Image (cartoon, rainbow, N blue to C red; front, side):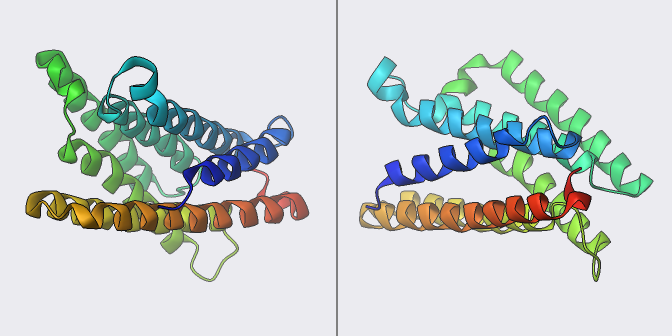
Length: 210
């Protein structure tokens, strides 16, 4: 299996570079920086949760799904530029958070079970928002264009990968688990490549500092 420690180091270095410009840039930049730092922290805790507390990381996966959905919804609320698109975003945000909150209040034990439904409900809207942002700026120089591409690429690819993982689990084909984990690590490196390039664009083009 590919060494995930290098992935954490890459993510930490990326977060450090973004955080350096945190107070010099605008709202969109700040939300995106909080997002990538939060993802790093949640991933790190999740990977050590069993070693520390004998708790499987399925527990923290719920917090990851919700954190990503909330932060990226705020992120795209600053990028989408039509009233209808923003209305879709706000309604989806309220309805989905309400549904998930009621779900866990009614049955708190769901926190200790992996929920494929939750993963897709919190991921698919972000994929749609990313696609909207891409469509809105066809032929234009869009703010956070490369960060958006990285998110769209990774979220779409990882969604397909989760489907594959569920199929492997269903067939009990354990020999394919490591292959899926390695593919996911490679996908994250590609995503980080987009994020690093976005940072380069921001620092050499003041118009991208939203």
